[in-house]
Structure formats: structure tokens, C-alpha cells
Image (cartoon, rainbow, N blue to C red):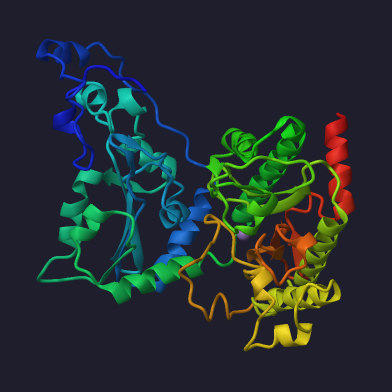
Length: 487
Ligand SMILES: [Mn+2]
């Protein structure tokens, strides 16, 4: 990182420590020199693609809350250590309604007769005649690149824009004591803003729920972006297979996949799970610090997040040396059969949980057939037993979209106990995991973990597997690896 003169203590955000230990402020003469002699900025940016989709989403939200002020912040940069931050990722709800990627923004929808006015509050770009461009290492243009600015944001995102520094005054005007207006705030993103508004947990939770539930059905533009993320993810999986003969660690696998995510998308949608051997039995193994051993399986659960922040969520379990052993193949084939049963239950009108029930029936009977289940499948499936879960551990579906576990604030009656409908996108991801120390499992199967995960769009006729470009059967996986290795 750059490490030159600044006046850090004056301009740093309060949550960041000063850097005066290694960095003194610039002399006044230098500052006066720095703010002169710059060409004027010219021109306005192009509007983002699909403005009409963002506008339609705002209108759909406002229609649910007539007469109320709606406040949706995107969040702020978070400190990783000392004075360095995590890479910023916009708040899902804010992005869904605006298309804006910058930190610190707040969308305010305020009621007027017949609807709402939208104002996007953004960090202003003071330009290079203001010394902060040079002295503010958190927001200064010379440190982190230019902010879009207020008039530019209005054009780019197709709505009225104002400086973030005006936000609190404007909210006070909207919320006058003699004429208070009901308002809703999306909490959890912007602590300084939250501190200025009275707590109203139930009303704000209902607002978060509405924002989650409106994302249950994806519009056409969202499906296009999910397909884009999934296609990039497929390329990432191919990269990993190509690199496998010379890869020796899980960390290498993670790096290969994540390179693709950063090149073809914004980032990974969640921390890559590169789990070799018995690590696959840890559901969210993200340390990825183990070796790759010939003869073992590699479970890769990874997704590219597109530039538009929609993410894929795909898992393949592949034999590191290119061929499944007999035991590995038996378990793999059973998980695949369970996934097929799950797919078959993916159609409009079915319960959200029906793919799960279908997959679990297949798993339980298959485990009985293989002599792994220490009781009958019927006994294991009995609702008050659910013994099969010792080996299957998790349900097979969750919604997918801007968040990998999308629509998480939706009510149970609309999500888990709701019905599938055309336009929903969900995963189908059965798995079997035999812990290496599980004495109920025959020894040859211990330490085997298999998950197969695809991303499915519910269509009026049934479903479409959006990640069908990656092979799924054991034979097809082996053939795919051979083919990639022969090139
Ligand atoms: Mn998943």
C-alpha cells in the first residue's frame, strides 16, 4: 500500500486509528500547491443498464408502505485490521433498489400524494480543489480513487441525488416533531444513522421481511445475471480441474477458483470451500489448509459473484486422481439419485420442502441398501427419529440470488413452508458425510463426504437446472476430468 505524507488525524473516520506514528502531515505550502493546477472534470457518466428494473423494484416496495418514509442504507467499510478495510460489498437491499456499488450511500423514499420520491444520498466528490483529495486516506480520491459524486450519481442511477452530509438534516425535516411521519429503517448496515433514529424493532423487522420477500421471485434481469454468475463458476471449476495435476493443497484450489471469480466477476459470493478427504465432512470447511492426496475426493463448493453481485452456489465432488474408488462411487451415485429425486420435485405449487423430503427418502433407503444405516430406512425416516440426518446433516435447498442464502428475512410461511413458484431460484444440494471417527459407519466409508449442488430456476412447466453445464454423474465427471487433462 502507498505510504506517503498525509494529515491523517484531521480527516480519518473516527473508527480508524491515526497513522502519525509513521506519517506526519504535509506542510501548508505543499497543501496550497496540491490544490491548484488540475484540469476541470468534464462530462457526466452513462446510466447503468436496466434502470427500469431498479425503478420498478422501488415502486413495488413503496406500494407496500404508502405514506411512510423508507430508509435503506448500503453500509460502510469495515475495518479488517488497524487502518485497513475489507473490500466493500454493497448492502443487498440497497443494491437491489439502486444498482449502486459505492459505500456510505443511503436511499430515502419519502411519501408524497400518490406515491414516493426517491433520493439517493452519496458521498460527495469535492474535487481536487479541496485538500481532502490528498489528505483523507479513507475517502480521498488520491488514496482510493474518485467517488462518483452527487450530480454524476443522479445521472448514473436515474434518481434524485444529494450529499450524504445533508442526510440527517433532511431526515429531521421529514420527521418533524409537530408532524411526525411513520418511517422504516433497514437496520444492521449503518450504525451512525441508526443512532439518530428511534428504535422500533417490530416495524423495522417487518420492513426487512418485505425486502426479503420481494426477492423471492426473480425478474428477467436477475435470471440473466444469475446465469452469468453460474457460467463463470463453471469456468472456475474447469480451471480447478485443469490445475489439479500440479496442485498439492486445498489452498491452491481456492486460489485457482478465486482468480476466476475476481477476473470474471466481482468476487466469490462466499468463502470457497475446498475440502479434500475427510475435510469434506465439515460442511463449511473454509480453512482450506490441508493437502490433496491421490485417491481421496475433493469437495469444491464455490460460486462466482457477478459484477452485478448475483452469486452462483455450486458443489462438485471429484476424485483427485481422476477415478472414483468403489466406495466413493457408491456414495456418490446415491447422492446423485437423491438429487434427481429433488429435481423432480422442483415445480410450481409444490411445497418448498418437497425436494428435501424426496431426496431424504432416497438417501435413507440407499443407506439401508448399502448396509450403512444401523436401523431400517423407515425407522430412520420416522419424523420423531430423523436418524438419517446423522449422515445427511443439512436440508437440500435454499433460495439463491444477491445473497447466497437469499431472502433470509422472509417469513417461514412464505419461504420454508411456502410453495414453489415460477421465477424462484434455489439450490438442490443433497450430501452424505461419514465422519472419520463415526463407529456406526462401516470402516471403508469413514471419511467420505460427498455433496452435489446445482442451481435451479422454477419455470411454469417445472424447472431448469442453470448449472447443468457441469457434469454430474460419476462417469461424466471422470470423462470431464480426462478431457480437460488431455488438452
Ligand atoms: Mn448452497
